[in-house]
Amino acid sequence: MADEPVVAEETGPTDLDDSSNCELFTSESPQDDNTLMSDTVVTSFNYCTKPVQVCGAWKAFSKFITRGCKWSPDGSCLLTNSDDCCLRIFNLPAALCQQRIDWNEMEEMVPVLKCSESGLIYDYAWFPGMNSNDPATCCFASTSTRNPVHLWDAYTGELRCSYRPYNHLDEPVAAHSIAFDSCGEKLYCGFDKMVRVFDVTRPGRCFEERPTNVKKMGQPGIISCFAFSPLGVYAAGSYCKTVAVYSESDGVLQFILSGHHGGVTHLRFSPDGQQLYSGGRKDAEILCWDLRNLGKVLYCMKRTVTTHQRMYFELSRCGNYLVSGNSNGIVTVWDLQVEPLELEDCEPLKKPGLFFKAHDDCVNGISLHPTMPVYATTSGQRKFPELSDDDSDTLFTFNDSEKVDNSLKLWLIDDRPQNAV
Image (cartoon, rainbow, N blue to C red; front, top):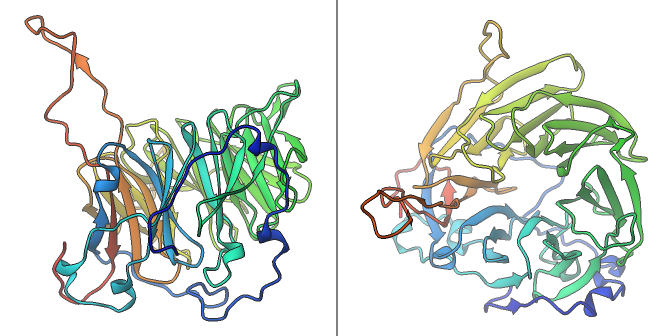
């Protein structure tokens, strides 16, 4: 990626109407075989081994809470979101590729690129075919308050194009969630009782509408997240506590799953597409659904979620491990090959295989590197003032005992003795 920081400010409203084709969609450059990403070989790491913190970033987020992180599909860089309405890219430290032993010499990570939106960023997603050896594929999408969906160049930080959703009144509306399909041909956007699908080769306002709730039938609420299965279906989560599975080709509803206590904020399919994992806001359970037996929850996994923000979890590429953060700064790892405990009057419970203290605040983001035994975590949450005592001169005060930790950390799974940073 770029060697020097690049700041890309949002362009004016007139520029957002440009529907010119992006070079990503017309490039016919062959994929380089020497990429970090492999489509055929899936390496399995033991995520139940306690990791070592090797580096991180603190200064970039000293004044703003983070809102998750995502490794690029080829593993060359990491994309973060934060409350200052900025997306930042951090390069994978070269020392991790060199298997260096002395982690005390690792420098703090510095963003090499920053893209600024004019409003709070709701969601963001890498183009699934991203390969650093082919600059045309290096891009990511974002959706934010009062803005169309933007496609950003991951090398220059420039705005490549915009996808502009409109409602039935011909008013521009902002998507609450976005996701590319597995092959990167379609861009799915979530709205209130509606999914709008863009062809990524056609920026502008040309889209397909797929209502999720018609005449009070179907899936109600704002569509908050997506996940795509290799079996030709996709799942959509709703803030009305439901998960629905639709046919990818035409958007026909297949079935609706209910069981969460809060709005669904994150979804993941197993590699074979047979299991679906879902998590919600202020909901202490990650639920596993077996799509071959839809009568009940297959099992659940407990975590601590006391915040309304999106709490990410991640599934390993081999499908054997699930990793999630908690509101108390703990990271929990479950070995999905271990049988769950059968309990009376409730769903079977999967016990964690590892948990450790990663941050001094809410761990809202987890992202596993696609090919290396490395994963990233981000932390932070909003702090609200409390009513002061009667003797105080101010009406509201902040609790000084609450720790603030807005940071990004990288963790290495390694059995060799090492010194943490």
